Image 1 (cartoon, rainbow, N blue to C red):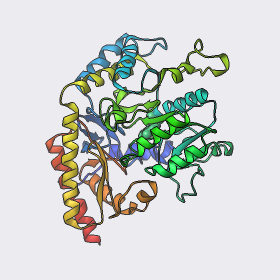
Image 2: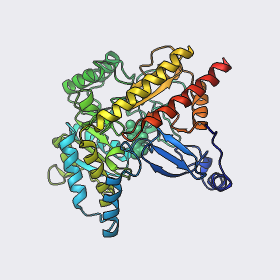
Image 3: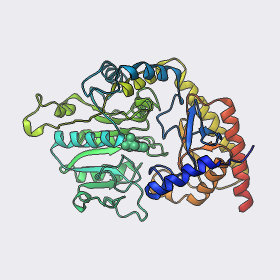
Length: 430
Ligand SMILES: Cc1ncc(COP(=O)(O)O)c(C=O)c1O
């Protein structure tokens, strides 16, 4: 296996990026390589190096890059117009398909990003409940808006339920309206929700937090206490929606929230996301359904545009084909089995956590069930491991393997060889 080398053209692009963007990146990943194309479960950089793609555009490309059904749906719409602001047939059909798929979704509104989807979900819940405060979980990520960019990645976690901002520029007035609870600790979360029930407008959670699955009973406990207290429960299903099952994490784990935020897969690789949920809460988006002061305006120039909606609709059609989820889950299970076996043989203190279609290694021999146990794992080892993988043609984020329906046996084999090489490097350094 040849190590990755970047040619002059690609190096020039990297230099340009470092000159014209803060930190030399678009914000998402460091500009260490420049991607030119993707096909199925692989991407190629500008120098022509090929990688097994476990990043999948940070999740949307679950059925693979350039799927012919998606490409032809998009190509058919582009010459007919790419955005109208007014309703279009693909948007209407996609909304209907999502309502048919997702248990909590009685009504939905389109937006362009996951950040907007969670922002509107929270705003709708607050409008319905007429309370301002929200409760989220430490380590949970819900996009970039002020009230959720709190205690996602605190360097020095504080005392629960105090919220710590993850970004400069968030007004101090926002901090007090956010309460933080530990993920997977049903008892603490339940007692915080009960204690603050008269102030809370919403509880928001990633049902599968980053790569940490919910322990049995955790989501059920959240459902129970929020229902008892009359507080809307929001599942952030930007990552899990249409991935863990056609009906998302709420189908996979069998717990139905009041509202959810959807994105990534449902946009077929285009900027499209949605807030969906109970009709009585979603009614706040309808000026004729609620008193004037309870109305929640929601405008978005490109939301539900026909190109993105056609891509999303074509993606959902592929997902409904028999065997699609079985294939992705079988690939994921094989990847996890091989990686776990290699780690076990190496005797490195490391193990795999997650679900078959979304997982990663944690360098610790302790169980990881929340943010605090996750940060006790060895991040430097993980970084090193990922660097060696990149040299062996594996493209992934720092903390996740996204598995695609399109990954092949050859991709699994290449990943196995790369893991083996990376484990050898770490083992030699011990
Ligand atoms: C769980 C979750 N919520 C929200 C978001 C924000 O979505 P976007 O990047 O589309 O704004 C993300 C993005 O990765 C996410 O993983």
